[in-house]
Length: 223
Length: 90
Image (cartoon, rainbow over all chains, first blue to last red; front, side, top):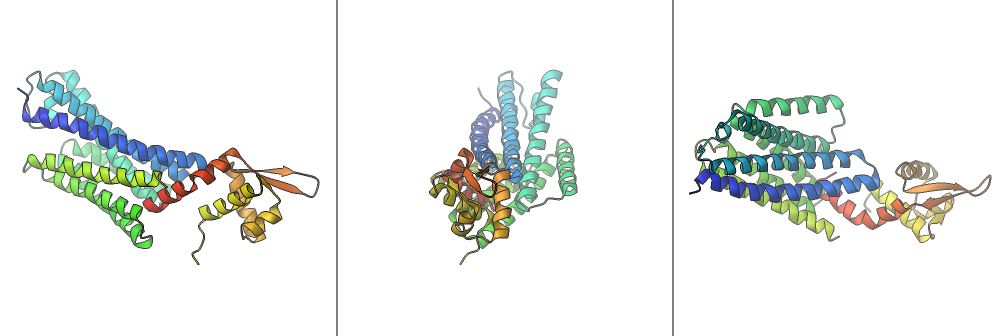
């Protein structure tokens, strides 16, 4: 019989695949704009989205490992301890877990720096260092990652909302709404340690956010 | 009237060259794209650096601006690029 953790991991795999695909589409679009107009910010924007897409691919691998481990009767409600059956799978699981967090925070920080037109290299170095440090610290205390991601996403949302106020277009509203929804999902993840069912709610909210982003992307393509 | 962005100006210049069958004199381009001489030089430099146009020397005094394949591609993609830029506030 498949346990609840395996079921969540299985659904998580599907969700992460969809979200990674949407992020790759946006990344590819931004990179193709860079190829046409040679503006570096589009290249970095593409790389930031690519980094988040890779974070989801890492999460997908992690969920797949949990799912397959479940069939070996390794049952745990704590994600990282699901890999502790052998040292090899533990280290591989840890590596995938850590890289997913680094890639996510680096990608989000990249988006924030680009949309705020931060051209100062020192700001980039400092914020990327803090993102990596947070990712490392969050492997011990999980909610640090969710709080940090929620804060960055909140700031990204505010910038996109400001953009909508300046240019009241459907696309701008869609992007602001998408990042607000994704931010909301990370706020939900913060409270997962109190109630595990919030993890599923968070995943669904997050998927909705990325689906809004997909709708915006498709509307851009139709132009 | 709304102020043109850099991208709008580049598109206007490329459309002007395209309408002139892919080749135009700098003075004509200046009038067609509604630019001053100083701004024309500035934006032309930008277009050349992005490989969207090339300059061809006709004789000692005259030169012509030619649109490249990448320039044609830019015009085709312009609305999508503009929409992407506006949506993400880039």
